[in-house]
Length: 135
Image 1: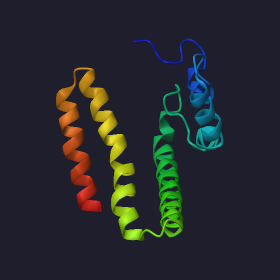
Image 2: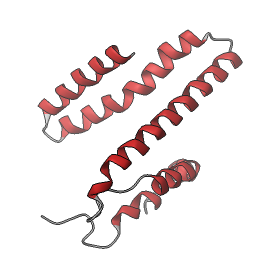
Image 3: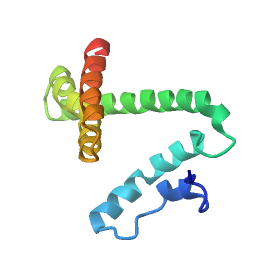
């Protein structure tokens, strides 16, 4: 089986702008680049040969990034809610719930289009169960 790194350091693709990008894609890329670069620098890439032993460290760094970004999302929603005179409960129930469930929905659509319907169903059931138990 060919590795993703047989043709050079393809793990750097996350830091490069796609060739056929429109103005909106370029704008989003340049806005997200500092965060993307910070995550790239702090999270070890365990896909590289010889770095499999750093998987626990990578998981811990990922959890820290999730905590930081969750706090930023919550603070931003509180500020936007205060600015628009919307209560924090409404902002949390609607906007934060949508933002947390959208990636699960998107990944379920992608895997079902690739012919993995059972994985899509398990993702839907698992993510909703996790959200209800933790939330």
